[in-house]
Length: 139
Image (cartoon, rainbow, N blue to C red; front, side, top):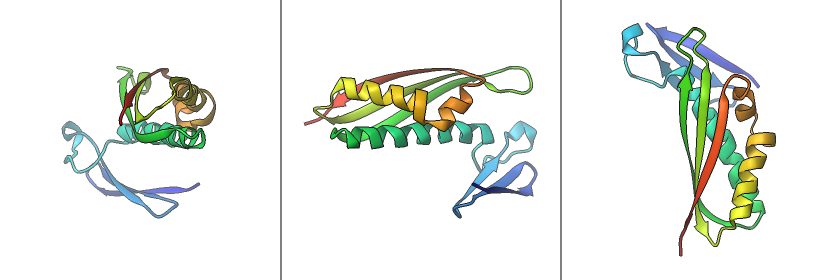
């Protein structure tokens, strides 16, 4: 896997993935940012959310669950000291579907967080990561 980050101006950068996609990153205004892109640390949380969501959808679909939506809400805390690593992360899964089996949702969360989601496991080296979920039934 490869990536490239190009400085644009001030504290704005364009990140390009090896798969050919790009995203703008920008720092906070107090450090010269212009509010034109996400902060790099925000991207880490989004990456983790995307990674674990991917796992959830795959496992629940393979388990023949009628899943209609999956939203992952992430709250985090960072160290006050440099390096300002994540120290606490809570991942809240909101899984919507028809006749979902709670045991399968719970198992999917456990497997993603303990075995499959590389981003969660990597961030867990510096942060205490907690997980919870809710199931919303639809007709």
